[in-house]
Image (tube, rainbow, N blue to C red; front, side, top):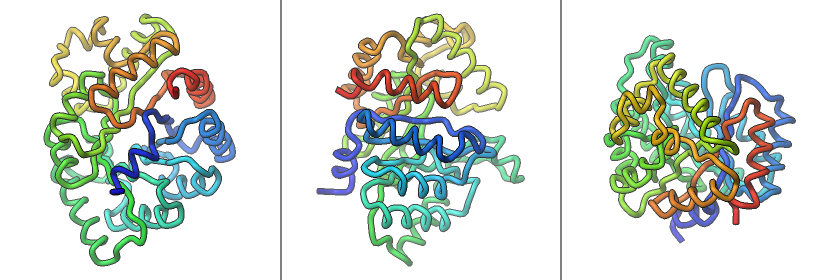
Length: 299
């Protein structure tokens, strides 16, 4: 069995993506939440890093050691947080300590993160150089245990980079129509692991969630999301409204049965593994929603 075949088998169809608040919740709370999600059947749990969050490799080392029999993925390890050689060594260390249970997701972040370091934001160039540096480190000091590497990819150039220089893509904050678009660029063999916002509630609840996402994207000039939405045919009016079509495609809303049915559509469209993020007010309520969804979405 190849690395990608083994990864697909270990991940299954549905996983969880948890937001990582700045140095919160307490580590023991997050360990308990990870155990709880694993106990109800989630085989994969992902989280990332941003300004002020825990260092992702130390964080995942703690969780992997505390919670057996679940795959953890970084969604994402930010290229502005560390050198590529350090990222490679961190990933190789976790892969060797916990074989088959770690997926490295890497992302170029956003312009405001590069600006804090006084760097120009050229995500494609930065990612290409980062992957090259990782590959050089791997050639000089091969990891005893192989691990999959996926890229935070939305647009066609980053998806092509994920196809040619990684094991696949982990798109974030994209509508359901992005999945067939990404699969076409990646081809049939690479991993496609989209994050998908879900909401146990009404369309109006979902509309408010979308308004918050759009406002946050504009506040931080997260142009990759805005450009990605427009590339898929959503107009400025759709996004600003937001329109029913945009709301229904960006957030899977309704009861658990309805959400499960729409997740099936994503899998049919080419996703290997879909990561669910409930639109919720707190870390605890996010976990509660994932537990509530589990009997339907993990069938």
